[in-house]
Length: 96
Image 1 (cartoon, one colour):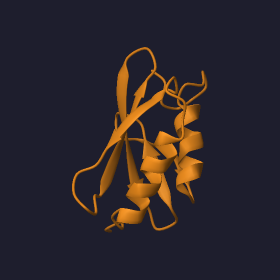
Image 2 (cartoon, rainbow, N blue to C red):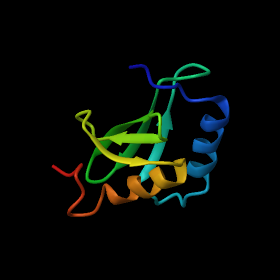
Image 3 (cartoon, rainbow, N blue to C red):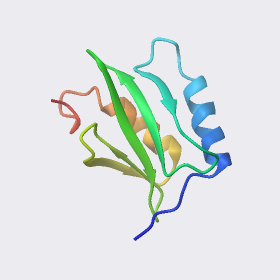
């Protein structure tokens, strides 16, 4: 089943959310290829660089760990920003 691609407006929102964070925030960057990408890569620095794929779902968005396992879903991109921040928590599903 195909999931929807990100719209240019969603890409702009991701960029706005990222730029609003302090420079010291663990979310160090993001990348996407094309005007309507299927996946946006979220880059984090914990003890080393990691990337997390962000994808669209029928109900909103899903954030996967760097192994491709979905560990957070949210209705909005703001919800997923909170999930990015939870990655560093000791009980976070994305921890090694």
